[in-house]
Image (cartoon, helix red, strand yellow):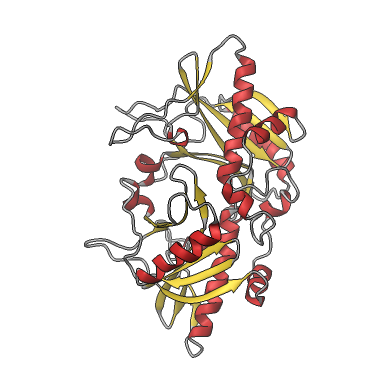
Length: 393
């Protein structure tokens, strides 16, 4: 992971419960996705848990396990530090699964590519992580902003300082660049198929627009829509598509969501006839559209070469999946392992519960992943990733 200079595993959104609050599961399995294959453990309820400030109650705790600082070789970091830390911390190793294991093929076959994956097959940047793609799209938006203001001074953002007075990393800044002193933030989103509502949507996450008595952390917001055709860049009007998203708003910012029509499966029709018009009608100003063969795309990619993580996973199975799609497949592998370890148990799908209006939630909204003889089993996966600023995996 790029901000610490070491390899690490980060299992996000783990609701372990707290004083007076019951956990939403009875057992937790952890799946580490590495360039070599999968490592599956049963969590002990304690190892690597971080409170992560305000976001804990709203979005769960991350479980983090670090390699040693300065060890750039992922295999050494994994074998000598990360896996031993899991074992020493009380996590029980259940199985390791190489990529040519039949259970991998079975899990992939049971979860074929989504409408999103099919639409982006072979599309530029589709094999990037969301974070790496976001960095490149922000670089394109910065080029556009500079071209629209040729006499302006464009500067890197001021990242500010940590509580201990040390300078934060550039990636930690609350906005992306300054133009003549104005703080410009950029958020990107992929046009994606939302299965439970049967429509295409854009979701720009973590937008801190400010609220009553709280100043926004930027002066202007640019939105970059990543689509199978190319990029669409708009200046946001401060209002369109803003959702409060309950508890998570204060901690993680608001998502801006723009939906296509229900039942329209063709992404191009949804984009051209509904999503882009909604952006324009909502007061967002279109700044530019950028096809994938545009020289600005090549320039942005050249200025942000693949990270240590991307290089380690080049050509590795599932590396071209979105994090969500990969997580679904890894959970399916873990469920096969759990069933094999308990051959006489009854394994059932999770009970997703009901919404406030009494309607049944979608299966993906369940707080755990399956039941084994009535015990609620949750599964979280994480990619072994290089964290640059601390020099370790």
